[in-house]
Image 1 (tube, rainbow, N blue to C red):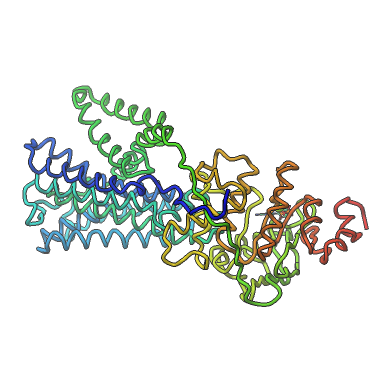
Image 2 (cartoon, protein in one colour):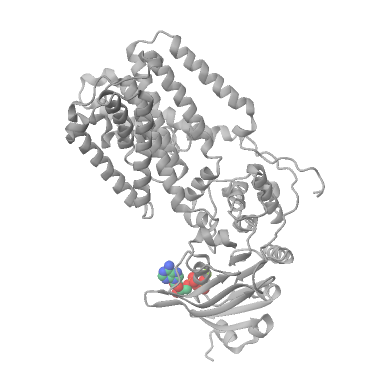
Length: 592
Ligand code: ADP
Ligand code: MG
């Protein structure tokens, strides 16, 4: 491939590539809104459409928090209720304008969601489920029992609407227009920095944090956006039906919202609309069965279970997977070769590990280890299985907290930083057991790496094309450029390792930590890896390499540190270390 061929733009996400598609979407939506405002709709149809339009907004929230970010929210009906009661009480009891109330309700839901997220998202998924259920129950209890504030079980009647949309039909047209715009924004969230971070967190939290993503903040943002959409949907709902009562916002309704999202397909707002529409319509279709008590519910339940069983990605997921067969991956254009420009500020030592220990209970996995990595070249960290190499790397990159000791990168002490901050500071790493974002393509994986904060090689206003170009160059560098647009699942084990290395290189790190990159490779692949390491080192990027393959280590590394039972037993220039009697003993298992 010729280097000076003009840089062609690489694959653009399909919906971004086609500007007419955006225009077409809005033209179509405008036509639907026009149709709704002009057609003669009977009250029954109107009610169904009103419910579908307003519920869909809340279900969008679940596409964000569950679909994009992989976090559970079992309180969407409570956020929906907050928005609805803000509009109900605000217009009825306090005589505020509809718009002001809609704003208040949306912001109140957002704040409640942000607070709930901030207090629980540091804990695991089960806690979030429990806390959202509790929050849901509290909101329901307040709606029922704080009679002075909420009117209690009787609910709030005669809720106001905006002056422009006084009739039900015009209000429906407004609600559908709002749905179209909100849906558009939610759809595009996945192509923003935040959206990419959410997907990375959903796929692999550890890899996301090591790629420089603040996992906690990303989750809180997803949860808060989800609550905001719940509140907004609720506000629209209250104006639509002009009456709210506590039973409309119970825990059972939260489950209905969740079912709608899963049924339609949680990965996309299109799925949200499909699921919502269907779950509102199925009971209507089964209405003729209502004469036989219980039968209706049984059929309804079985229908939902069957759909979810046979379409685990939901109805839209099923359709999208089918359509994807006809879309061939776009061939990638030529990009300029990858430049590695590691930060060279600071001393001769790029990494200084001082008195580092990591204890797991009584086990001293790393025990008072000292070593320094000189700037430039390859430094190997070796030792028998279980000697503490991976643990050392995990402490350096912040996945484990050191029991004691310090880690200094360049001039900054990074011992107390979180993993993503260490990545911002210039650390890059791969994992012994490969950690890629498995729902993404190779290119999308590497884009996440390129997006590291502090990557001086990404122009500030470069936008997505600059990230993509950098990612492509990194993939090209490891030899996988032509396959950039293939999903991760199609790559062999060895190639997945290369993608992981490309993801780390795209971030332009100061120090690259590789944990057993040669494990599982055949001899040809190992030679390729050796060559790759030399090409990386040739550009001045320092590598700290863990590996068992002595041909690779002795061939590539200038400096070796040896661990055994968590202790450093040798350290120095390669040849000397490999001849050291303690090292030979550790590897051959003889007593010294
Ligand atoms: P190496 O990478 O050199 O093969 P590791 O660093 O993975 O070795 O493991 C060193 C020791 O620490 C092993 O005895 C291992 O069982 C233990 N260890 C590693 N991680 C943990 C953990 N999260 N909890 C408890 N023990 C651990
Ligand atoms: Mg290991």
